[in-house]
Image (cartoon, rainbow, N blue to C red; front, top):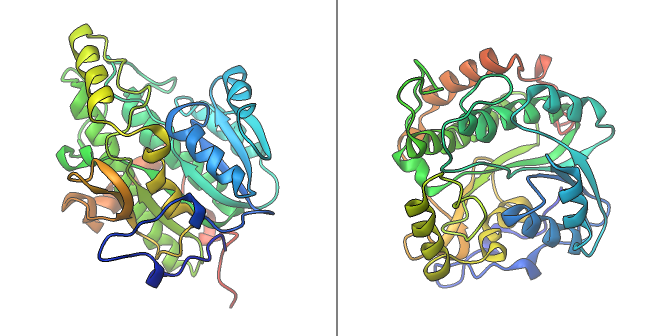
Length: 315
């Protein structure tokens, strides 16, 4: 188990003043962080490594990953992973040996012009959801403690387009992004249900960063929108280290499976991390099961046979 922080220690006067000094000693633990070379990913990596974890930076560009790893005070290694290519996802998982304490599904794309993954999926849905869906299930036999998936407050405006998740002929960048972020939470929900049903001690949790100034917001292909996002980053957003706090909170604190955390202030945009609510759709177990079935069909990756995972409870 990664965590030593009990539930009773999480709140002070109704708002938890959690910070990285509360991360327990992680020496001897191994974590994988996707998209770890910049933004929330490198902030998450730095904090986990400082606490003693060996952190694998799972990145598309190995050279950029190695440059990022050089800024980390702690034990790291860099491995190639392109979530927009299921072949790359399989290769990453096939190379894994030994136990994995923590998987952080952090990587993502946002507000981009219409594009497709190598396998033909809409890029935001394919990267943010399907790539992580496949990666998690392929690594699950090795995972011993928890899976953390990064979502967004924008999941609240999302819906899953089961008839055509690729939004063929009707692409809208915001619709695509919110769909992918709702998918993240539905995935977390159904994964926890399956883990519980199989008697596993592994937990599935989620977090959102609020409004964090990352490199995701300036790739819309529209100068006006890019300028708007740039102004928002300067005037409203919190920095990457603050944005990573909800992820680190659910990755290391003693929380039940299915928990979802985000910033505690300014309508969830800023502030110390705390447990938070999700939309009605994101809490719907039937939607979660439907999405899981669709994701298995699209990726060809299923929950491990027999429900076996490394963190299964002893008989």
